Image (cartoon, rainbow over all chains, first blue to last red; front, side, top):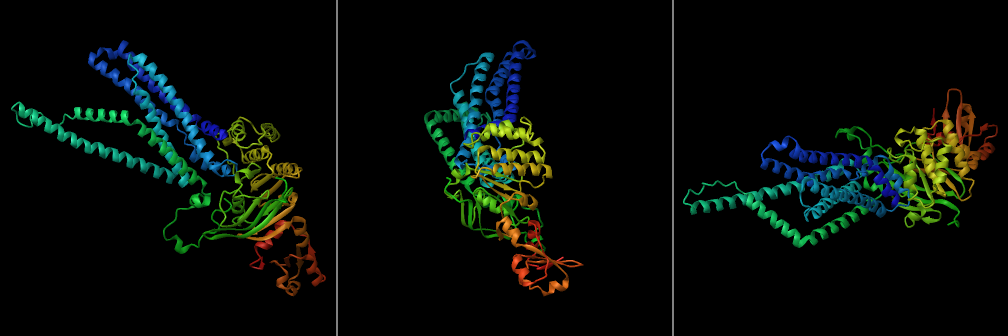
Length: 298
Length: 292
């Protein structure tokens, strides 16, 4: 397994370097914003504007720069198929459990390294920006790492299941697009509830003041969003263990289904036949005899 | 692990694809020998090799390697098997140094010293990425890797195809060195029958998924022969006595599988010794019986 872990990390070297470069570039820009706010052109703006700019920059540095680490994640599965490593792997004594385990461990190592680096960088940012290192930062970073890990594990499963980049990519993308759509739908429907609440609240206020009911408009939904966010935070605080349990369960399930998918012989998985499938007219089968010896001498 | 006679025993392997069937294949690779596995493209050589390696699953039949069933003792068996494929199965971004670090943790018997020794012998660069290797270099690299973990069985799928004669000879010499150890065996599929003629102890020939011949190479070459005669003489030969015949403008060449009985039956016929290539050619055309 050690050999496979080394292989995964070795093959990810380029991506690691690129991700780190983007990460440090973003960090540098954020620090430059802060320096500009203290010594440069930004300080010429109003105090409020400068404070807002610096705060936004700080949170961008803490929460958005970490997104560049998503590129850290090894995407070596397809290159295993393209380079015929998958075939070779089957001729070695490595078991499917070891193969999937090695992929999980190498990704875990990379994510953990990223977390340590980012926590260290956040501490430095706090010192530079004069902000406090808040207690929720670390759980938030871990949550991000969990999401990335689950995404990776699911992607791995899709590749082992379909053994074809295009098909796996399609299923993977469709799943996450559906997830994204359902989140958008939830947020959008919530917005309607906010609007109704806001208009009811404003109408009540206007009535008390003896003004027409639409005097304050209906768009001030900020307090309700904040209420919801607080509710979510409280929910996470009280039931964080459910999230951890869910993560572990998902990881275990994805591990076993990936092992099962990988165990299927290549012919049953359809790799050989599908890779050799040619684009044909739907009528070609009427005029051409069936090609023989599929999967042979490949 | 040494109480077995055959490195590989294949019994009645059948594998069905749409349009192709590997039909009831059985043969043995005796321990300490090299078996040439010949057949046309699409004959089923790779399918057979892939079933031995458990890359694909046979519909029925049994495969034993070192006397053990591959379905139950797969990981154990694979410590002692080396496979060489027609294409390099290593990532192009890797170099020999990285490959050594990977494979030393995969194979218990891996020897970095042996691996780098072979690289030096083949004059392969250690730090150059595999993507920049030529076809010959890639094949040598695969063979170097295959021979570096003290495997008892080497399975090669078209390993010498596409290589120039100098490189092929170099590789064949290494195989002969490898076979100096009586525990070592080789199953080598190839189109290049001249290579097999040089080094193989036994030969298995399949065509369209069916086993046509299997046995010791010398016996096969001894029993088979090419009858060279005129068309008039050819008319006198019973069609059942020949595999197939090549009809030329000036005469006929017919392959016989039992030289001795044919020469007894038809006195005066000239029966020349044959080669594996000719045997393959005449057997492939056996259904047509007569061809030009």
